[in-house]
Length: 534
Image (cartoon, rainbow, N blue to C red; front, side, top):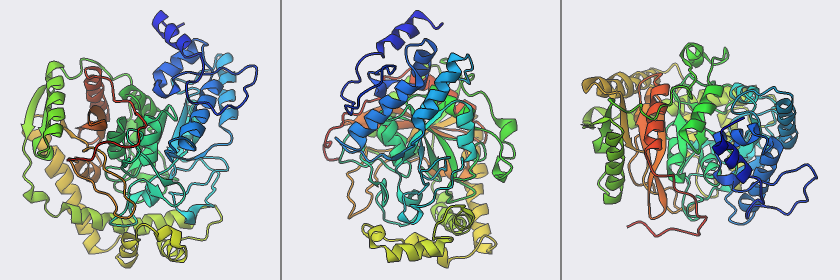
């Protein structure tokens, strides 16, 4: 049995589901759950261990909440589809628990997957595009198979920026032709950032215990930051990308999006590992850890943390949040060092990154489409471009200029691509993060993840303004964690921790220690809007 505190918490969950019921009649063995939206994986697992809750009750509560505020009410549009077999899967986990076979802390925990990640069942994997509405492969991506093996219940698929935000240079994050526009649960007129917008909004609004997102550059950390949750982009190669609709072989990775750092560590421990079909994971089995075991409230004591001062911008409210985070780090025992980055060496980094992404998109997306076992009519990037031209609803709000540029561009053996790749990786890794860490004998780097969420405007595209530190770790393939650090007029702001290659455990440990010393994360208010930014 767990402690009295855990038992008390578990028993407190067993009441009416406040404001989140569809009115569906319940069977005689069902338990209703209160405040499901505020419960972490650790808390839900404790409640099941103590017999106060079942996986089936938790799963039904999330399905009710999805129906009440995602499909109806505020209509967040964060979830594209629920898995028809989720209840049966939860019952199977309950039967195992009754038989004494508990797979770990994820046993019976319902999670959502971004809809570019394949999962076994009748639900298609669409990347938000009508072109893939029939992409029912009925297979688990290896990362999903690992989550199931750890006992997780796959609840459904989340909305995303269509094609993971690589279709147009001027798009609106969080919009897809399949799922519509994701709303930020902190202010419904604000954007949830992209491309894992649905995953961020769903976790923030309590539609699942956690979600899995993917990132090429900022697509986990920005949605997590703007929705006020934890998001972790692992070292590229720690988690398999097989059966995940790709952009880039050198930058893509999946990662956890959750309410707490502990929950992210639980998910990463289950997801990490090698995959013979993904050469990038060759070191994963040797590098992976029990990421929960490394979490320690005192981890920051004596550590040297470098603040990316030049990346903070000059907005007073953001600087105040950064200063408060620095104070928290110092109170936790860290030595904080200002790091000044000379922008001149990185002047062409963005151009090199885009060159790399477009070349790899053409090759890697083409390979995925050609190999899909589903009956889809698009088998190459050129086919997708033609499909979009034939379906005006796809191009209603923004074009496909990046797709067209990628299709017209060179292949992965072109000298221009190879030179851009080598230069970008060198500048971001050895001459970027590695140099910054070594120069001041730093353990990790820190910055502000995001500015406040902007007003969504499908006719104009994104209006992102504020700090961003995602590019260097994205290009280098290094770990990047965001943790809630405050809010501006109700809109969440995250703080980032960045490490070198395979420093995933250290980054999570720093984020955990910071989280434990910080105020609780902001809760979504589901209000219509927030004051316009000044």
